[in-house]
Length: 346
Ligand code: UFG
Image (cartoon, rainbow, N blue to C red; front, side, top):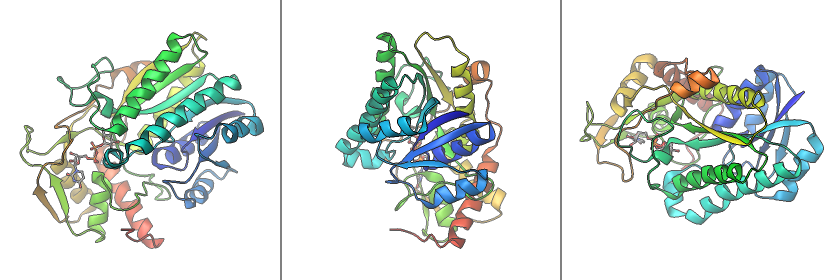
């Protein structure tokens, strides 16, 4: 049995990865403290996988509790570390929370992995480490810029920590995945993103506006140096992203035992503007969205999208779903949430 520890396995990307791991023959073991996820996700995961799911309710900065997972569950072949806070805005307001949790949980996990002789790690990073790059698309060799937020800095520090351990010849075989903009939901409508409070991110704001939970979407900035004046991003369907984690784990286990940390961009390779994203949402779901174009949001980069050749060439992975698929699945998820009685929380 190929057991895999999935920290943050009840979260948005984590839960989709749990499903893909099952489908690929792995046995995920979920570790989550439910501070930013909902326990109902577990029922959905059990229904989707028809499997008994091992779940540990704990904070990954607690080394003793985390060690129990390794002790109880035994024969683990790798860990995928999602558990982290992820709001750029909140990180500016509460930096200590981000430093303590995002860096603390990786430090703790790496310590416990070493204690139990586990070497294989997939780490969740973000394209935020690139800041506003000078040239597009960004490759993994594009120099990192000074982080624009404490959240972004925690991702840079975590990546550096993994590199430093590799340099120190610690027994670690790691893949760092830099996500571009993950959106969408599982096509079953059973799992998706569950933002707590007012969403910061574009697609949950769009779906909540379409559902009547928010009045109007504000497109942040219409005067950027882009074809239609709105910001450009690389939106990737969360199911494609989840599949990349399985490929990464498969790939690590075929490598020789020298320590390494290989970094991969995960995106579609295509830049899409906010206005194009809105229009695609309207077209695939056949509805009209209330939106206005407003002021720029502080800290936003103008445009960023990925070069994804390395993931294709090394991992044999590429995004298969389109923006329209993601917008359809996001809306399907939103309507399912409404049926389940999840109302606006703030
Ligand atoms: N946007 C709007 N209106 C909204 C929300 C967002 O116009 O109500 C715009 C933003 O200005 C941006 C685009 O939609 O141009 C995407 O914004 P998101 O907040 O969805 O995503 P970001 O690109 O800002 O952030 C994402 C991840 C972060 C990560 C960052 C790296 O959410 O975790 O990419 O660039 F750090």
